Image (tube, rainbow, N blue to C red; front, side, top):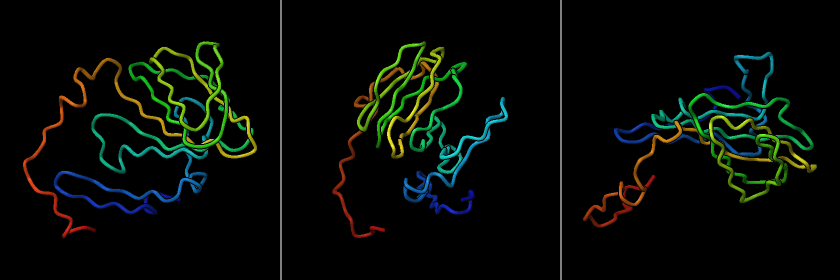
Length: 155
């Protein structure tokens, strides 16, 4: 799949994109700039939906596969949200199980890698943003609008 295969809609205050079924993530890949390694099953969506505060990627690691390197970040912490499958995550030499519903946060300096231990895909989302940049609380940032909800103009 190429950048032209997903559908996007832009409005004044939003962008909506459909990247397709998660089972089709193997069509996407990412070339690491610092190594001669292509990571299959990875789709970054920052540019697709015009993100300004974080990077999000959808990921699929095939059966019994592993990320063949450790990595860390200069500024960004990462949050991994596991949607399907089972595996093991390693941070600074500590190994722990991961499965559907597991959430892992890693500081920028944490040396990390992961592997799939099943004969099915390991599917997960990674969100990265600058460490210590969020100073508020979600509920305090939201503002209720005194307006009746109307679904007449639904898509």
